[in-house]
Image 1: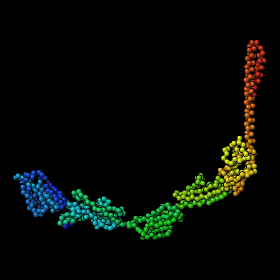
Image 2 (image 1 turned 120 degrees about the vertical axis):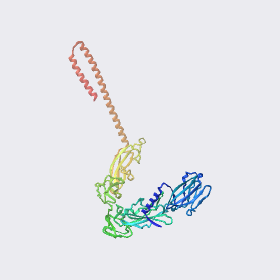
Image 3 (image 1 turned 180 degrees about the vertical axis):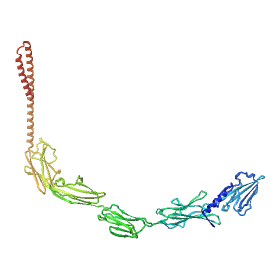
Image 4 (image 1 turned 90 degrees about the vertical axis):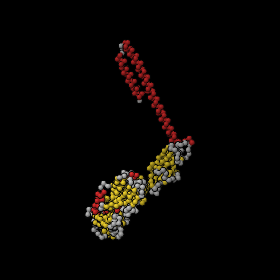
Length: 582
């Protein structure tokens, strides 16, 4: 075996190609396979051929006979070199050459005798072989940034013509520039087979981005076949140039746990760090995190991390712990008296803006309650909710307003449906549903007990009914004096009402109705009488005027007297008309 440089290989390949451009027919065969070399390409009919002879060029102007075949005779092989590898096709006299070798790259000539003519058909033979494989060997374990390092060797074995190897990074060809990329190729030719083995060495200066890069080598054979090696990756080593501190969660709440993570861009990455916790230095081995548990508002501040072997290379982050503290001056159950004042104070300490809302017995209030003059309506459960983002606090108290019970109103109402106990001495069958409802409206807390008495006779006590209103129904057969009494642990109040007898009330109502009817009749009679009188006077006046006009027309006398009488009569009619209107 001997070595050839890449330029020498290219020169030999060009020389071979030039030798083929001689007007000769060229046949390409594959190494190790059977090659068929045609004779005359069918331009001469087989039955016209008397003798067929094949010979080959040995170089230096010498030829060697291979075989001869005469018409109706067997093939006679004369060359010992090809004795076991050649034969001739019976149909077209082609030369069949098995197990093709690179030594078969020469000119073979077919001679035919047709009648008295002898013709020759030379054919040039070229043998190709695709590389047996493509592989990257001698790989370096790791690449250092900024340093030209031998990455590996790509080998294409047993090829013809010699393989031309291309290096690729992430499927993009690398071009040698003598600085960052250096490629050295050599070709080794086998003395036994003549096949070539191409070796290509890549030297490469790595970058950080090459940490996950895939390197391959490939070759494009002259017959179109392409081979690509399996991809290889390399560990890229470089010193740490920058570190960063990551805080999780970024906006912790009081009571949360906060994890500090120090990230360095070196490869391999550092495994030990210093954490600076507000003036306290903590060294962490074989880890890049540190956790602060149960943070409080005092945790807020600046935190740092640095390399143990290079303390000047550090990173820092501020941590702000969100907190919400709510204090209410009132809590539990608050008992106060009516008309008193109650001081309410809400204190909020928070790391951000807050929103406040109030409810009374689960009903939202428009604003914070004020208790300058307590009333019973102020009683209830008060809750205050303070929110800041996702953080929420709730405080509350229950207010009980107490006071002496007071009867706000004691009244009666007649004719209401009987839905309560009917009280009285007796009930006339003719007076069904003629009853009186007594209403005692009370205000007070604790809930007072309401009791009734009629003409000094007490009824059974009953509890507070219908909220502030208590009712009883009576059928008064005689005039009654009814009292309503309310009492609780603080005090009492009493109110009295006089209830008229049912029969007296009915009699008075009928008398009022009769008097009203008589008055109506009298008024109607007076009006009708005045209207009739007005009509009679008007008719008499009309007749008189008619008669007077007739006499005056006849005699022409007493005109002045008649005029005075007419005026008096008109005044009389007008006076009567005014009375009729009244």
